[in-house]
Length: 347
Image 1 (cartoon, rainbow, N blue to C red):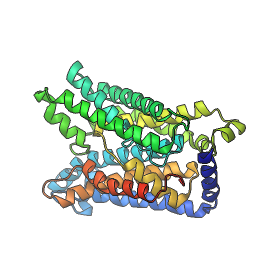
Image 2 (tube, helix red, strand yellow; image 1 turned 90 degrees about the vertical axis):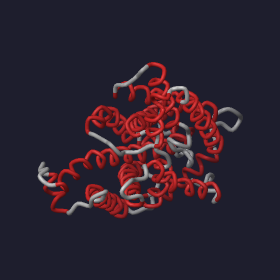
Image 3 (cartoon, helix red, strand yellow; image 1 turned 135 degrees about the vertical axis):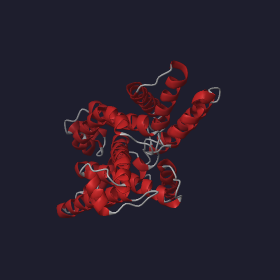
Image 4 (cartoon, rainbow, N blue to C red; image 1 turned 180 degrees about the vertical axis):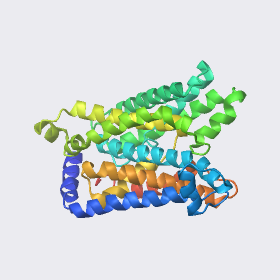
């Protein structure tokens, strides 16, 4: 009951955030994302002028710069889509579990999706985009149920600490299984290891299009769960008293997050910490009302992953650092700060 009362207090404080301030931050997120998208098209092994970007967006490819923009456009789109999906999934997971440490990476969901894909490729010869996506979604769903079940054991139920520990242990175990599956298969080891790092390099629209229906379905389910998550934040007993079907609310919201995580992992590989860092930052900006938190987390997640991709290209020219490494370097210290500052009981 303590968790519900804590969440109720947080909800009351969140409601004090003025509507104009929320709208201001939402608009700022749109502007920042737009600027980063233009920077992503401009920055690379060869920097491109703004007029060449404009020409390339009109479909012209007569110069080297315009051709470079055309090649970077799918990568930019994938970074925006993947970052938005992970930011939204993290906010939903934290709302469903009332756990400030919930994140597709920390709860092992991304690793479960990765294991399913690797097993499918190594043992069943999966090669099509649809097979990758369905395998990743099935792995993400199975892992989410497993971790929540393990974290729910005991008298106190699914506490934030138990869920985090269960997720961390599951993630480590599944990562070891991925290595065990890949080691005997030298023919696929190189590609799997590169995919496991998590990145958006080499993106094409042919890779992106198959995941769009799954991401749209996940987006709709997640956004539609905003009011339900507000009710769940008050505690199960109060949510039931307000007429909410708690099991249905959790299930539909979780399904949306699983679709987002699975589809993103299938096309990008496992990218961690975006879903942890973004919702925390957005709560400071717009409060805990999920009707505002979910869309702002989506925009900020897209902006974060896009910024990480740009940074990875800048620090290692003419090569690059994969976006999964950059987000890990940013998110690792942030995770430690959350634990050490003892915010688990307050958020």
